[in-house]
Image (cartoon, rainbow, N blue to C red):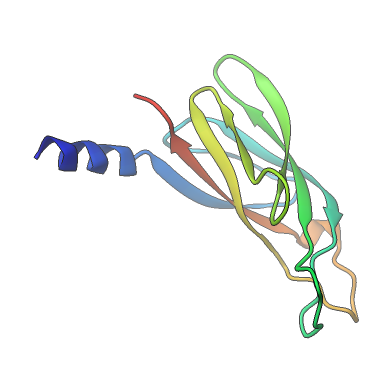
Length: 121
């Protein structure tokens, strides 16, 4: 019974949200402010193309906590997808839109989905 309750309590400290390029959001549970600073690279395989490698996109985010501020680079495919900050795990889940061969993606149209999870109680 206790284990079930403990798992439920931990699940409640998980939060996902989507952030537009250049915007900032304060996560309601962690109170961390997450700012989507830039897309550093986007080499993901375009839609409709048969690629040998899926590619990768790397985004830069700034996270402001209670005690400090730090910039991170998260990857969609290769490299670190997230990091730990002030007892919370921050991970990028996805980046949209997907690339197409016939039109470049403007920085302003990017949206990144993040998940923040409490690591300790």
